[in-house]
Length: 110
Length: 109
Image (tube, rainbow over all chains, first blue to last red; front, side):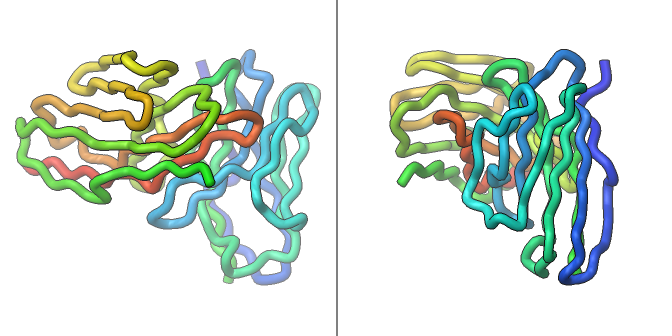
């Protein structure tokens, strides 16, 4: 079975630009969460979606938004990129309490 | 404020030298404690879930235990391929997982 897949794997953006990251959950998983991980830190929770509805939001500015589609895939959007948004963005899917992570998208803002 | 603290930050062991990693938490309403392994540039790999004090889980050379205030990840006779960052996380409610900063483990041949 395929695990959580994320695209793209790497990308470079300029300050002020907008970016969209994509995630496909494990088949049968209806919940998707997004995390940001900066170097040397643990992942930090951004959003959780379940059945296309937002179920939780972390302490991130309104520049961050997300949505979940009928097939349970998800997108994370970040507007007006700042240098500090450079990080590994992780998507996790779950069917219960246990979350399974994808390989992440490495975003570099220059 | 809810907090998850992992220690040590880094640990270097010789192959075969057993040790333990610590995860202490100051949270209320714990719904589960999770251990993950993360290799450089990769996403975290799920290892264990613990739900109640006294619970233990084992997988190969790893054993995780849970008390009311902390969890330990015991590594028995480690091999170089066990080198990674080990992350601890707690689940409280709808706010996703709260992670510690991790323990960077190096196993030298």
